[in-house]
Length: 606
Image 1 (cartoon, one colour):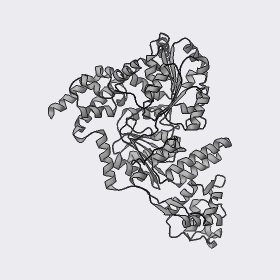
Image 2: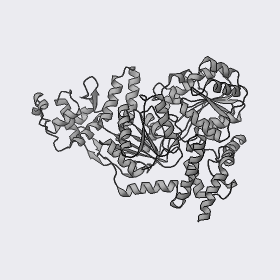
Image 3: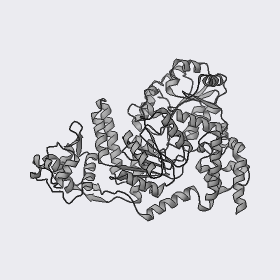
Image 4: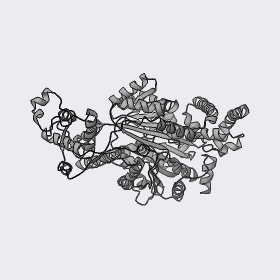
């Protein structure tokens, strides 16, 4: 462990281990297996990189995405670590050269996709090598219940069978207890020691809005909070991705679409721009993001409801990996709830899978509709208790107003019943509001007792109420009946006035200038003080020059947090740069003189 700590300080540039890192590294150094759950940005990579370097042989890192491999290898080479990847971007001669280095024990780490690892050629190659360890990254992909399921992961048990003496570590940021058990079972990690770090990402602010006009609300959020920041906007459909990217571009933002319907070359081009350029927004389906290492994503927004809390946590976790303040924002509405429930009900999956999917969706809806601290609700899902409200989510900053919705809910449920449980939300709202409509008259619903009993509510208010009734399980959607709403058993006590129903009052957005100003002040203060901003900006310019020269993303050179620390500490000589988190000996040797030159120019100008 002395060697491990020396590597942490001199190579990676950090003074001490965080959370469970030291215990995980010690476990692998002793030749034992481990299962590590750590939040995105929590330092998972160090848990296998350091023991792979310390132990004899090469660490084999199983990674699901080409982009992740390339990012990690670029970053490690900046630290002077001998590493490589094997994937489809290499030609045959490049691959042979890497294989020669592997056989000659010249590599500390080798990154490879599970599909390639499992072919006979690769397995036979590994038989001839000295292997330090196997690291299975994004291990939740093994779970058939998960949102990122990859069947190849379930075949990775062969590692234990074929390389029984080589320690293995499975790593993920997203896994409830059932998924953790499945990872152990599918990967034959029954004797692995489990390390669960806190799921809490304290630097992330959670904000969930229920309402319509999602694009307008998104624009308001961007203008107030992130007028020039890089971020991700998630949408459920390819069509919505294209529409949103075009809409943002027309308003002056750099917004690039990303979904499975685009060509591979265009997706790769958009991803490369997002990683390398400043101020780029990626508008994407869930096809984008897993394994993206960009640390300075300042916001993640959702214009569609995620299918589960795991998906939400995974996607929002891509914000603020550098530990600096970041925002997550979501706008969801009635159609999201209906569409996702229909997608699950109408799928051809096994009934057990459908039940699990519905359960996960209901948990996600519960998070959205809750009036409690978002972070407490989110962490409780993963079995973690937060004793006090976080003070850094919308429900803490602007507690929602609750209202007695019992009478309005009875009107809505009665209208569903009187109309024969054959109609969708829009039709039911027209009946409740007493709309003069030929279809309503033909069906005779203008003669029902529920006609016009809700004229005092707006269309938006009724849609909000119906959304919550569906989300809370009082109504369900008939996927075979074109979205018709059906009563459930749960609604009986409410219809009989045996139960009082308290609901959140609709809150479209928080336009408080005081609140917005305090958020901006908090973020600026956490990143860079005003007096340090000129130096910080010049350091960013230097970083961009260095990155362009080497053809790598700027964050591979230095993270924003490292530049912020330099701006604050203003080191006067090369040696004092080693006190800055994120600067090890290799980066000091390559960039120290240039950095000090920029710092001194600002010190002299004071």
